[in-house]
Length: 237
Image: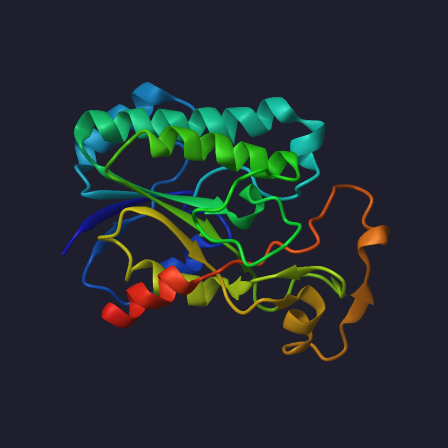
């Protein structure tokens, strides 16, 4: 059994993790208990709990346009907040598992491997890559570049000319607990397909949308992931 602390316990993904039956003791502190923007708060909380692993979900994600409008908030939460957590984990020799995103890749060719070059196409991707930089400096860590979304699909329209590797939150939660002992970088996602094809499986009535109509934030044409590494690891479990 491992004692695990999860940041971002009130976010969209955490409820699915809470549903997983596991032998591990998983704690979901509220923001007032563990505030990633306050380094001393993090240190005190981790010293009290003494977890073996911290899974870092907290941060700013959607709406992605907010990262363009308010870079101060994006930097504070996703870059400085993550850096604070890395420092505290390194000081106490706690393993850190960091949820990053497929949007650290350029998003123009798809089938991205963990070793491919990185060039985020929008500020959200840059903010998550900024967090990755701090995590990469700490050897006892795992970076997960995750491509996930809610079920049911949250929108009434979906892009038919943009590919990705969406996986539902509940499926990512099941995969996550199989990777607790891994280190390095792992892509997590599903089949490469257009967002429209992914969404219409659950909602046949969903309408088509197009990249040229997305004006609030740039969206990549093909951010799909190569998940061969993940599949090989799961086979060995």
